[in-house]
Image (cartoon, rainbow, N blue to C red; front, side):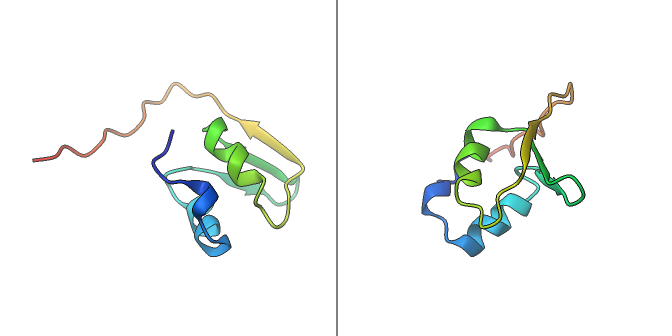
Length: 72
């Protein structure tokens, strides 16, 4: 789960968060599908969208997640 508490974000912060690389979400304008890889966080975010999407698609890939930065 991501460290961001989606329930506490303003609408503007939520829009920025959904567009961030961290979530890697995209909305296909022609189909209205929202494609995201992280179900728990996205489900909470979807409830707050001003313009609901028609369908949510969760992709499963074999790509490794980026490594977390190492604290020195």
